[in-house]
Image 1 (cartoon, rainbow, N blue to C red):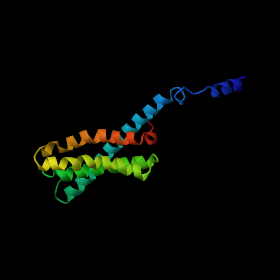
Image 2 (image 1 turned 90 degrees about the vertical axis):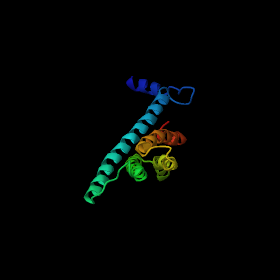
Image 3 (image 1 turned 120 degrees about the vertical axis):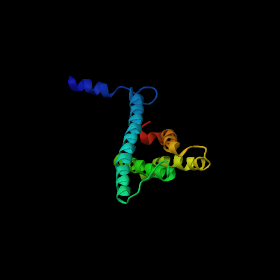
Image 4 (image 1 turned 180 degrees about the horizontal axis):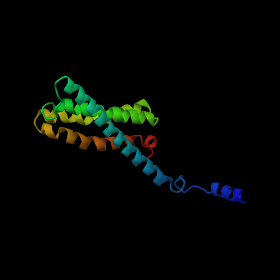
Length: 152
């Protein structure tokens, strides 16, 4: 009797969209969760590698100041976040193309903002904040470009 109930449940037709009921909501959640996981991986990379960088520079008797060296600080931060995110993406089974594309989303904002910094349109202190404001939606655009891969 119970076997028959399972068989009937499995024969239920999917919704008109071609997806099973609730699957669309699940894929949106999967997409959002993936975005959040990448943000966490970026923060971990930034904290771990950033601390290592600061420690090595301190041993060398120097420091990397976002005010005095905004370009270097921005590139170092983008690198640290890219490493954390790349490790997580590769662990989740993403290919190199999409991983490197997402890493590019970390560096493009810095490179785009450098001319504005050099022309004194933006202040050195605001460089990293502006970089993040551009980076987060850019990551989303990269994910939307490869929606099937990220679960959207």
